[in-house]
Image (cartoon, rainbow, N blue to C red):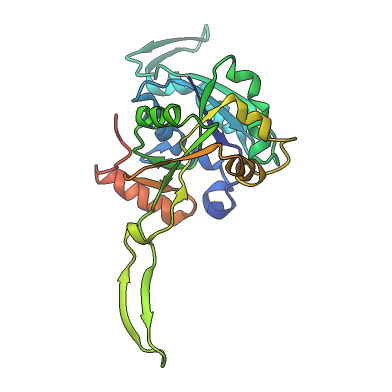
Length: 257
């Protein structure tokens, strides 16, 4: 089964980093967040990836062109331009990199990889900037059981802001961090989609999360897989610092390999 990863956006909210590289190539623990996402799927038996490239997509391609060499001890024979590799730890991945355009919106990016899905009835889709410890087998079982065209993983992220109770004269009566159970459910990515989803993408000129998802919901063709575990996006430098701290401490919840 194919795993499609959206990796073409400009990452404007983390421009301090994305001015130099595409957002999925921003590193956590000296590895691109894209690598972390792929490792999570691969650890659960899914090794066939389609990556939708756009902004600075050549850097993603260069990463995989040289991936094998990066992982191996190497001897270079400069005179005859030959290389010997030793002790390679390369992953068992099949990676298809697709140029989906610089300004293309998410629905359009997915339309452009339609032919690469092949004859599979179902494929997976996620964003190239978020990590989680989602149980993929449980997600797919849920998707199959409910028989919808689309299943999205939803979660209640931990509260980032304090909940403040204020009386009429402006005095703060209480202040506490909002618990997960007090948060709204949000789309965490990690989706399972049937081929029929392409019929909802129109001409690809919109965000997937707008009209396509709205039509799927109106047709009662979307299901929500509720994920109680860890999920975090990497939208800002503060998010990156948070993920880096978890990784450095050896307590990264998404590291299931």
